[in-house]
Length: 381
Ligand code: NAD
Ligand code: MG
Image: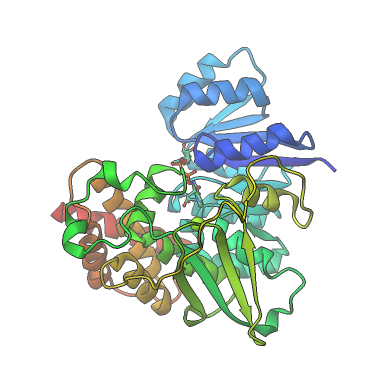
């Protein structure tokens, strides 16, 4: 059966890997693409995939692209209205949310309201608006299929198992490039060093988040919503080889895990064809080649990103939004060389401490909290 897909963030790491899956599966048809501002790459994608619509978030990039592809039938839209327009197209079956950051909230909600299946990579959206998105998915009977590798592994480890017999989720974590470092050593880490992830090649924001363990913190909150579980039932296990992608422990002590090489193509493809498993070429795990699989406890007192995320996730309400927004801004400042690595933690702490808590924020209140967090950070940095 053919499936029409819309990709939010098609020029990024997850977006381009999704297009590789499309190349290998003729039953997938791309009907809309979007990106922020990479016009050259988007022009190539439009010529290759011939989508009905394309959204460039950035106005001037949209104008530039429209001029360049005037000879095609693809319609160019822009801004938040454009993102929402392509996420709700009648022809669309599945929206792949491969955009980075909480900018994904409104298009994701609009897609769910329009009854689209969500293949979710954009974890920031679930972290900040999970309390709105999950009930909405249930109301609309819309599946939300995880693309994040750990969450895909957890989801795969739940297939055919009784949901009420889960004891805990074991969320694996590579530990990132700075595993084993002290807090004083972390202070001196540069963007260049932080961008060198040992196992995964990803966009720059999530790569920094992996170095700070903020990513693992976001993933705990993401798992809490996707699998409707308490944060206390999610245990982070550092596993530097990234072969076990996560596990689920059941009440009889049995543990189901999903293993594989570190490659996002499998979780993306699994989400697009769930519950089927389609053939896929690529490297296989060779157990005779694997020297060892090792496991450690995470160091939450050094990698404060994890500690603060757990605090924000447990408190819930608007606090995960503040945690996430502060981190988004801090990572941008770090990448520009304007702050040191551990100042990411300082900015998150300052923002969480200053915040006036809202128990059950609406989308507007979430976006307001985001704006207030940015304003606060701008007064100091
Ligand atoms: P990336 O930086 O490589 O790509 C981000 C994409 O979003 C780009 O296409 C960019 O143009 C687009 N984008 C950014 N701002 C936009 C805006 N305002 N409007 C429209 N498009 C915009 O990021 P990535 O690594 O592909 O990550 C995307 C999401 O997937 C993130 O939420 C990340 O946490 C999650 N994720 C990524 C990986 C991975 O392996 N890369 C793994 C798990 C989860
Ligand atoms: Mg992940």
